[in-house]
Image (cartoon, rainbow, N blue to C red; front, side, top):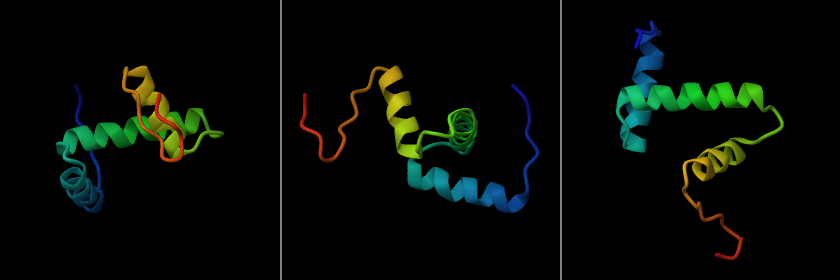
Length: 70
């Protein structure tokens, strides 16, 4: 595990986002880093497509609005 040096304003945004997302500050930072990396590697995918893909790979069956269940 390492230490990442970030600007104070970004840390403040992490703190606020972590509360809204019910994650720790470290978990929120890891989420943003992972999503950012996946976005760079898959520019054809939207944020929602990336999140759905990650949920499916984790074994979660996300409900998508407008799609029938099952």
